[in-house]
Image 1 (tube, rainbow, N blue to C red):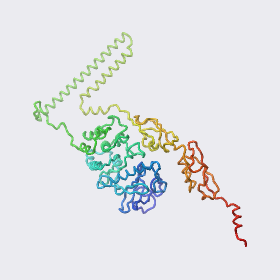
Image 2: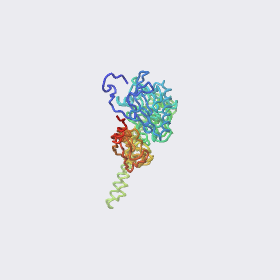
Image 3: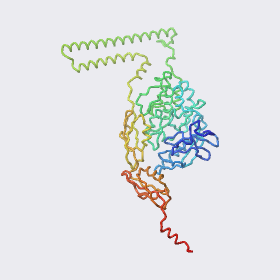
Length: 568
C-alpha cells in the first residue's frame, strides 16, 4: 500500500474505490486492532482471506490474514463482525484455535530468513487475524513463466539449500506445511526463496468441513485420504517442485498416478544428474512407507557426491592394475567380443525367420493341394509370425547399452490416466465442480434435503474409492435446502431486507400493501403465517408479506378530538 494523492484507479495495482467488494470479506479502509488499515482483498480460500494492509505504527506494507471459513460462518454486507452458524460453533472454535496456534508457532521462527515472517496475532470481530511480512518479489510459478520455464541443476544447487534447511527446522518445531508448490514459494528481489502459504491441516486435506485448497501435482496422495500426514508429506511437495523446476513439466496429480507412469526427470531433461533424478522420484513415491521420510534424509541423498563405477582402475585376471596400454588392448578385445556376439545373435534371428518363412511356404503348398487352409491354421501362422517378429525386435535390445534399454522402457504403451473418486457428500457442489474441472464431469440434479445445507452434495452415482478414467461423468444430487423451514422474524425489516431472508430459505412469497400505523411506513407489518410457523418449501407454499402503508386518520378520531376542545 502507498499514499495516493490523485483521483481515479491506483496506478500500481489498479484498485479503485468504486470497485465492487465481495460482501463476505472486509471492505478496504477497515481499521483493525487500532493499528492496521485493511486494503484490497488479494486471495481467499476455505480457511479465510488475505488482504494487503498497512501497519500505521511501523509505517510499512503487510499482509493481513483473516480466519474466515465461509462454510462455518458469515458476515453481513458492510459489517465487520462475523456470525458463526449455530450448528458449527464448536468446530469453528476448534479450527480458529488451530489457526492461532499455527501462527504463534511461526511467529517464534520469524528470525528465519526463508519463510514469510509473522509479525502479530490478535482477535477481533469474533475471529482471529495474523499479520504477515509483505514479500517484495514474485511467486516461483510466475518466475518460471517469465523465464525459460526451467532451471539447471547448478542454479537449483544455489537457490534451494537455504529453503530446504528452513523446511527441516520448521518440521523440528512440529509444523507441517502440506501446501508446498510453485504458488507458495516466492522469489524475492534479492533472488532468494521464501516459503509462504501456511494453513491449518483441514485446508490442505480433502473431505473436511471447509473447502480445501490442494495444489494438483504437488499434494501427496495421503492428502486425498484419511492417511496420517507428516514430514514425508512435505518431502513429496518439495520433490514435486524440483521435478517441475528441473524438467519444465508439471508432475502428474498423485491420485491420477498408477505404478510407474510418470517419467523420471532425467528422461525429460538429459542434463539432470542420474542420482538427482532418482532421489526426486524416491521423494515422490506414492507409498508413505517407501518414500523418503524426512527433509534431512532427502537433502543428504540429493547433494551426496555421485558414485561412479568407472573410477576404479582396470585390473588383469591376477588382480594386478593394468597399464594404460594394456587397458586399451583389453577394452578393444571387449568391444570385438561384443560385436561378435551381436553378429551371432543377428545370424540366429535371420535363420529363425528363414525357417519360419520356409515352413509357412511349405504349409501353403500343401494347402493348395489339399484345399484352402482352415481358419485355425491361418491364425496359427499369423501368431507364429508375430512371435518371431517380436523376438527379432527384442533380442538386439537385450544386447544394446543400458541407456538404450532405459529409452525403450520409457516408450512403452501409455497407461490410461485414472482418478480415485472421493466422498463428495456434504461438500459444496460449486467448489467441488471447479476443483475437479478437466478431471471429472459433474451432472447435478437438485432436490430438497432436511439433512444437508443448500448447495451441498448429498448423493453420488459412483462410490468413493473407485478408480475411473479422467473425464468420467458422475451424477450428483445437490441440496436445495430444507423441505420445511420456520418463517423468519420480520421485526424492523423493510421489504428488501425481509424478502432477502425469504429467498435464502427458498420461501416463495408475494408482497401486498396494508394500511396501518402500527409500524413505520415501508416496514413489514405482518405475514399470512406467524413467525416460527413451518412453511412447506418443497410444496411451493406461498407466504404473503404485508408492507405497511400509512393509513388515513379516522373521522371518529377527528370528531373526538374536536369535541374535547374547550368551548368559548
